[in-house]
Length: 354
Image 1: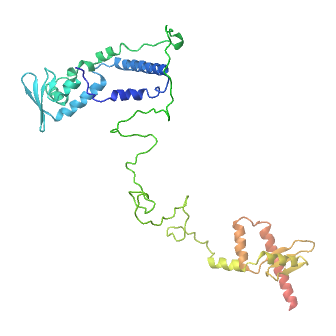
Image 2 (image 1 turned 120 degrees about the vertical axis):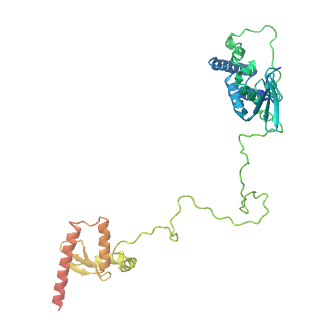
Image 3 (image 1 turned 135 degrees about the vertical axis):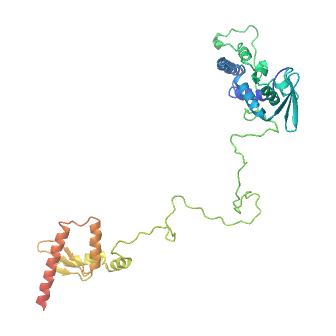
C-alpha cells in the first residue's frame, strides 16, 4: 500500500509552476529545458542528502519532532501486547505497536507515527524514528536518486532517424492572446498580478464625504468639498498665536519710523534744490527740502552739508552705517568739516544782517 498523505494535486501544480517559463518554447526546446532542470535538481538533492547522518530525512525528522512535542498533552495507559490506550479530553484511541496500527488510521495511511503513536512511543522511552516507514529513510532516498537523468550531447551530434520524417500538425492561429496561466476552478480564489484586492480598504464618497461607499451608490445629499491645502510649507500668519513676531530695534519705534518716512523729502525735490545750488557758489538752503548744500569755487560738484530734518538724517546715517556705506575717513570727517564751515557761514550771515 503506498504511503502518502497527499489527497490533492499539489505535485502537478508545483511542477506546472516549475516549467512555466519553458512552456512557451518549441516542443524539442521545451523538453530539453525540462530535462536539464530535472538533471540539476536530482544532482542537488542527492548531494544534499549524502552528508546527512540521521536515519530519516531532515524534513521527516522535523515533522515527527513537532508531533512528539504536541503529544505531551495526551495521557497514555499501557496494556498487554504492546497495546496502549491514548486519551485527550473526550477523545480516546487504541495504539498497537506490534501491528503498526492506530484507531485514527493516520499511521497506516502516511507511514509516519501520529500524535497518539508518538505519545505511546514516548511512554516506552523509545525513538520515534524507529517506527517510521522505510520509504522516509535516508538510504532509500539515496537509492532512489542513483538512477537519475544522464547528460546528452548537442543537437548537432544527434543521430538522424531513418524513415519518413514526422511533420508537425497544421497550425491554426487562435483569436486573442495566448493564455499562459492555468484555468482555475470556480472554488479557487482568483488571483491577479495587476489588480489589488479591495479587502481591508475603505472607500470614501466624494459626494457626501462618508466612509463605506462611493458616489455611484450614494443617496445622500451633496456637501461642499473643502478646498485642498496648497503644496509646500504653510505660510506664517499673523492670526496664528504661535507665530513669532520680530521685536523692533532698540530706540526705534513704529511711530518714529512713520514720522521719518512722512517728512523725508522726495528725490525730485532734492534734485531741484541741487540744480539751484549748482548755479552759484557758497552756501545754499534748498527751498523745496530745506537741506543745506555747498559749492566750492572751482568745483562743479554740489556737497550735501546737513538736512533740516534731524530725525531722518540720524536714522538714515545709522542705517547706512549698519549697511557699511559710511567711510570713516572720507565720509564722516569730510561731512563734519563741511557742517562746521556751513554753521560758521550761517552765523556770519546772520550777524551781518543784524
